[in-house]
Length: 120
Image 1 (spheres, one colour):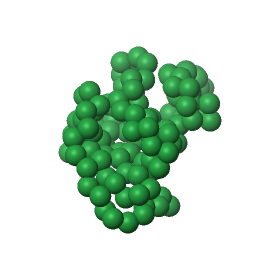
Image 2 (spheres, rainbow, N blue to C red):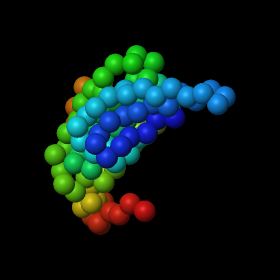
Image 3 (cartoon, helix red, strand yellow):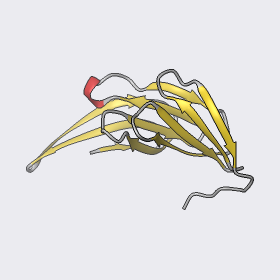
Image 4 (cartoon, one colour):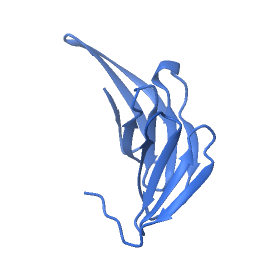
């Protein structure tokens, strides 16, 4: 079980039978608004409401790597663009949909929907 606290810490609970172990995986020092697993469960996106997206690979047990920083106070969400785990899509309140490379955080494309977007 992965979860985050308000302080930007990614925590893993390993639960087996009635026993559990707690491990702090990463500290990104920004409140994490969402956690999204890749379709093959090899990567975890950590998304902040400030527009920063980090990648964490549970099998590698390393630090979270900053992939992109949209520096947008209008940033709403991000997710993997399937199939595969090579691209991410983000959306802003103003309706701008952006595509990013997860390999190096390169901005690839955008589409303006022309409407305000809300997350429910």
